[in-house]
Image (cartoon, rainbow, N blue to C red; front, side, top):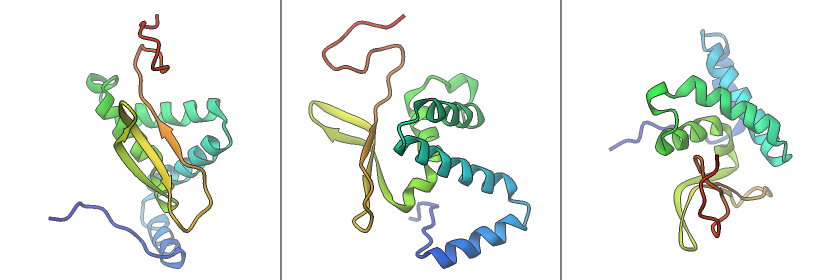
Amino acid sequence: MGTGEVWIPNSEIQQEFINSIEDGGWEEVIKSINMSDELLNATLNCDEEKVAEYLDKSHSDNTSILQYNNENSLSCVISIAYYSARKNYTIHREFPAGKGFADLVFLPRSNCNMPAFIVELKYNHCTEPDKKQKLR
């Protein structure tokens, strides 16, 4: 059964796809793709304020208020927000890591020289594994 996903194999066809949706009322899609590019750049440049800003916008735009602090919803939002990273990364959810699972792992594709990175989601808890206390 199909996954409902598409992969565009090369940059020329990707550009034609972008050109076709720019002129067809898909401005919001283009805006989201551009924001995704900016989010990835901010992440790779360690600009935590920009990363927080872009993720907050994506979270607000793509999550129901009833599921706002749900880890699965946030994982999906992050996958959407980093959509353009798929060009250079394979994204794994719940990736085995040490004593548990990393929420999202971005592994660079073999044809690019990008750093890997991990997203670990915590709500009202410390991210350090040896600290068990809740944050206020």
